[in-house]
Figure: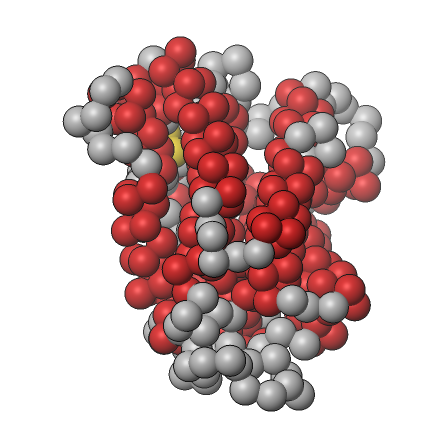
Length: 315
């Protein structure tokens, strides 16, 4: 999908922004490139000691990626040119957490994956011990970045750190991975979607909440954009489950067939009904988006772009 033609960055029914909106709000390609470039600046070079650790960090973090979570945070925040750098750094912190979670998910003791983002997984390329250390380093780097964004008020930085902590911990990614490792037959659809929420949706919601906090959205709007992100995350996971059953590894840049034996919406409902569930989540996401007051067209363009990259045509 091409550039967004409608200028983003204005809340519906609100006055103009404090300054000229960031031009990156209207161009996903440039925004993703800016995120990639900034990520490379925020972590040590591969030549810096210890080279193996820093090489592993860069191998995982700078691999080709859609950068969905940081883009989502950036679009919700809708920064002007003056606040662009601060929002970009906060968005990059989210991508570091996401990448760290992928490194850990791919380990032999977890999902035992060999391919991620079109390249060997970090433990395959650098060894298990270095991969684990790289994940720890990335998570800590993310918190350090948030602490150092002097352009944001201290209270805002504190709220962002709290959102990130909840997304990672015992009510977030870690809990989701533990439940996924111990999945058993006999679970119902709600239980499967709970795990999908923890493994995928929770970081989508954190990304939207990052943007909402930075933009100063009210409680009603923040709750609505959180619902949007929750349903978007569940649609994203359902799409991944569909691709795990139907796609080739070369087409999607990661291992397929890793869900074998685990309950998924596809294994429970079949491909057609899982596809209907995917469409239902997208419809509920769009309804919540309208309620949030966030400019809808850039967000809808993001959704189309996400799933087009997966080879899935959205309704």
